[in-house]
Image (cartoon, rainbow, N blue to C red; front, side, top):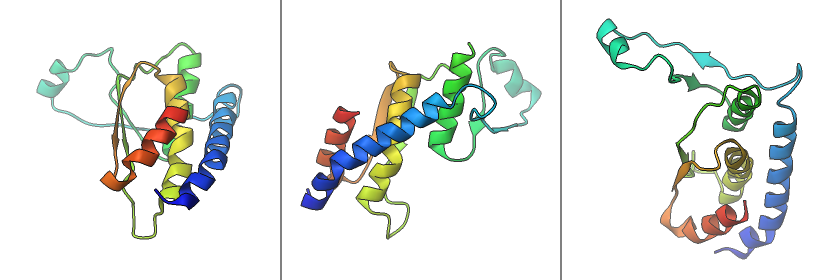
Amino acid sequence: MEATVLEHLPRLLTQGRRDAQRLAGATGGRYRERAVRDESVASAETCARIDANSPHRILRGDPALSLAALLSEAREGRAPGIGVASLDLHPAHTNDTLLARLARCIPRCVLLRHLAPDAVGFVLAPREEHAILQLVLDAV
């Protein structure tokens, strides 16, 4: 593990929790985050197999804002019922550093813990980053 990542970790965790708290606090009122939904079209045969009461939708946009929107729905009594969550922390491009990826994922993890505390989580990441990611996941 790089010393620089460990040195920055407390600040990243503090800022990530603060960002998640700000988003969670903004789930009420007229400024709340809203989920942007995509509609999908399926054949009649497929529709017959889908339970009408279960949500089937795709959220577009920033994952942290999408989680805040789902948290807003849960507070309105329309809980999304998340059972499994997956987080891919592989670099998006060659300049995507571990610090940048941690700064993006920490607020998402905190919001997900509020939204779906019993959800099963899967984290996909490069093998050499597993130790630092375990520290981060234990801290959130």
